[in-house]
Image (cartoon, rainbow, N blue to C red; front, side, top):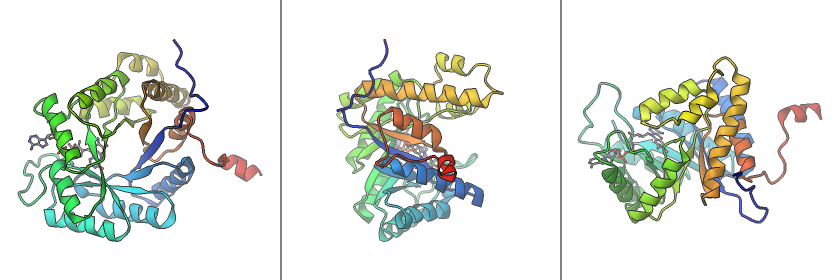
Length: 301
Ligand code: FAD
């Protein structure tokens, strides 16, 4: 049957948005127009990713500091520990704290392809990183969770134990890897509860516009693509406009199913594009305090 519409009286969910640090001036402009549109939705926090192996260290830092200085948003800096010494990581963290950044998304990260040596001087896992960050300052910390199990986990149970250790070490929430099958996430929530995890496990929502890219992503991360989703995007490779509309329906159905099951917090992988996230937020009942005007309307007025 049809899902119920959001009720007038029920509180709108809390949202957070993820951005990546821009590499070029054009991407910088795109990012900031995305931030300006989504900040009207009053997110709980916005996060900025950290390129593999710390490759965007300075760009991530610059974006986070600009968020502190030029917006009222609460930024969360992603930080990975692979390939850096404990001292280097502690220094980055202390620099963030001194600049007014209070929230870190603490991740292990991945080694560059071909490299296998973790380095004895570094934090060996996100769990150790969380402990280290807490020694530097009393950060709010989010960590990663994997409803479909991390590809390197010894077993689903070991992965869950690892998540629990990260939360027990001082993280206050987990954000999930993107998933496309909502049932998988809901079953994962049950397993977390059964394992004694009480912290919020916030679903990471990736609105898919490019199905071919989603397939690549799923191969990399072990995320299943349900058959119905492949059928939805079938034959649309050369039709981006229809694909966008289908994308909205797919993501909207996903979040409304989660909302109907009691999920009241969502994290969006925006890919620095606001429109789909904005529309899905609207469907979830999240509205700007003063209705935002589209840029076309602005210029027409
Ligand atoms: P961990 O929690 O340390 O776990 C990794 C794996 O190792 C798990 O399978 C765990 O079970 C296992 N493990 C941990 N400790 C042990 C142990 N002692 N013994 C045996 N097994 C162990 N990557 C980036 O480079 N930059 C980003 O900005 C970024 N942002 C992300 C945001 C989110 C929300 C998510 C879900 C992922 C993100 N990633 C990012 C990807 C992440 O870095 C990779 O998935 C990485 O492989 C694992 O990081 P983790 O923090 O989950 O590691």
